[in-house]
Image (cartoon, rainbow, N blue to C red; front, side, top):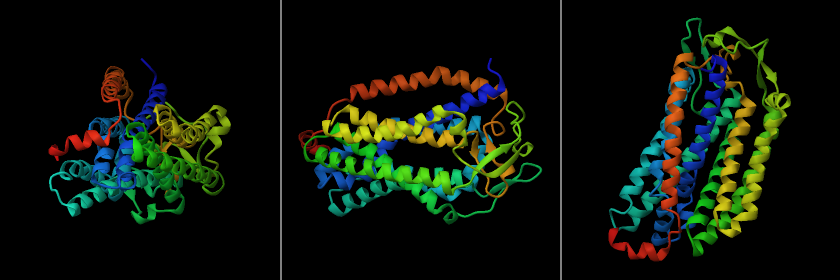
Length: 376
C-alpha cells in the first residue's frame, strides 16, 4: 500500500490525466461543433461535419464524467469550493453540454432552413462556450479565486461571475479556444475529404499559429505580471486535510517549480512542438496532424499543472485558505480504494474507446450523406 503522500501525488497525476483525456477526446467534438458553419457551407456539408463526431461524442463524454467523479471523491474540498463559487460559470458549461445532444437529435427533425440554422448556431455556441469558459477557469487558478475558510472550515465566496473575466483569464480562454479549434480542424481534416477537408487544413494552419502567439503571450504574462503563491516553510505532505494548517505567501514566481524541476519544461516544449507539427503535417490530411494537436493539448494542460503544483485552487482573499495537493484530498483509505478501482476500470475504458475508433476509422463523404438522405 502506498503512503499518504504518494497517494496524493498519484491522484494529482490521475486528475491531470483525466483532464487531458477529456480535453483530447471531447475537445475535438466541441471544436467540430464550433466550426460547423465554417467548414460546412450547405446542409449536406454540415451533415458530413457532424457525422464525423456523432457516433463517438457520447462515448467521449465518459472522460468528463470520470474527471468530475474523481474530483468529487479524491478532492472533495476542491469540488465543493469550485462548484459552489463558480456556480454560474459551471451552469453555463452544463447548459452547453445539455444543448449539444438536443442539437444533434433535433436538427434533422424538421426540413426547414430556419430550423436547421437555429440548431447549427446552438451547436456552434455550445462548442465555443465550453472551450472559452474552461480556459477562463484555468486562468483564474493563477490569479486566485475569491474564497476563504473560517476557523470551522466553512467556505465563503466574495466574487461574481464577471469578476472572473480578468484580462489574463480571457487570454487563457482564448488559448483554450484556439487550441481546441485547431484540434477540431485536425479531426475534420482526418475524417473528411474534398472542399471540407481543404477548409479544415487552412483553418488549422491559422488557428495553430494564433494558438502559439496566445500561448507565448500568456506564458510571458504569467511569468512577469501575475504574482505566484508559495508555501512558507516545509509542507506537511502526509497530514490531515486542513488547508488552514499551513502558511502561504503571494508574490513569488509561478515558474518557481520549473526552476526546481527543469524537466517540467518538457511540457511547454511539447505544446509548442505539437503546434509546429500541425503546421508541418496538416497538409498530409492524416493521423499525424491529429496526434500533433493531441500533443499540443496535453502539453498545454501539463504546463499549467506543473506551474500550479502543489496548488489546486489558490485563494485571492486569504492565501492561507488555498487548496493544495497536501491538504484538500480524501482520506488515505479512500484514495487507496479508488486507486484500486481505477487500476481495474480505466484500462477497460481505454481499450473500449480504442476499439470503437478502430471500427469507425475512415472518412465521411458527401456521397455517403446523400445516399442516406431518407434518414433525415
